[in-house]
Amino acid sequence: MQQYLPKLEHSWFELHQHYHFSEPQKIFNKLIAAYNEKQRAYHTLQHLYECLVLFESIRADLNDAYAVALALWFHDVVYDPQAKDNELKSAELFDQYVAHDLSADDVQKIKRWIIATQKHEATNELDLQFLLDIDLAILAASPERFEEYEQQIQQEYAWVDPEIYSIKRKEVLAYFYQAEPLYQTEYFQKYFEQSAKNNLKSAINA
Image 1 (cartoon, one colour):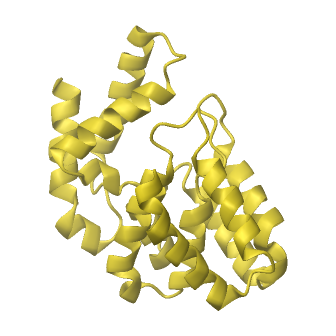
Image 2 (image 1 turned 135 degrees about the vertical axis):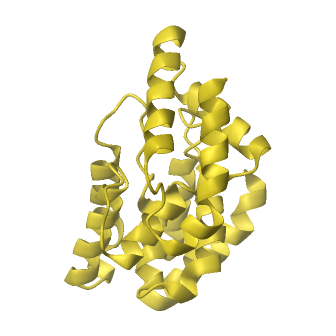
């Protein structure tokens, strides 16, 4: 995970230059520690890093790029594979860590976006569309990375009976495969949709 730190540090302190966090280093350290927790296999610094790299490629298309980046930083900061309120708790932790450094409007918007990463429902809000598409971009990764992702998710759910896991996982993959379109932005539909559908089809058939 060490290889991701330079990029993450650069991203975080760029946000600090914009928002002027009162305790940037302390919060950064807490975030890195959270994404390093032992119950994680996919929802790690690797996932955060991949999201932020992708964010850089589309940031010019965003209305409020800083808010999207900050939402990405916090969207999985709380992750317990056995819990159903990770996104809500992540939003609460965001509130606790940086709310006093942001405008009330920004706080409410980013908390809403973090919570939206739970259900990935369709929205007309462009920045949120991009945020949700970035979070699901892993589905369009190279076949090798997608296979690694599948293994990582399985690891996080090692506490579930393997047969039940297999059935439930197939249901999730089928849900994404049947989504028309899977991605909400034109950019992701153009460059990611087909790769994601190919990966999902292979995984379902396997």
